Image (tube, rainbow, N blue to C red; front, side, top):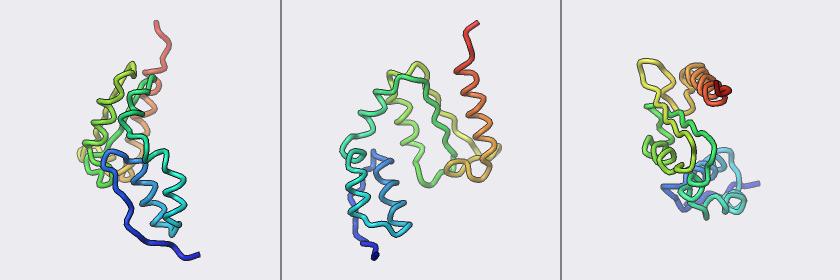
Length: 125
């Protein structure tokens, strides 16, 4: 099967759509297939999704993340207005975990996330 290569419409406020299309292109998938499968992601702006979040939210972001701009992480946290708790944790070079998904030091981000979950889900005293 030959992969179709063509320009897709970029949506600066819709990370899910953009990443789905880019990942499909990288593995040689048919662009028409991913566009059809991800149309609901494209058609519904993240701003409409973030406001519907009603549980605690943690966004972990590496300071050197070259795939997701810090502005998108900040915007997601700001838009989650119905969440009872919204936290943005930025990992810097002094501690590691600064790349996308913390791939340069995944344990630092995973440790932080599990501690955050334990704190958020701790029974009230």
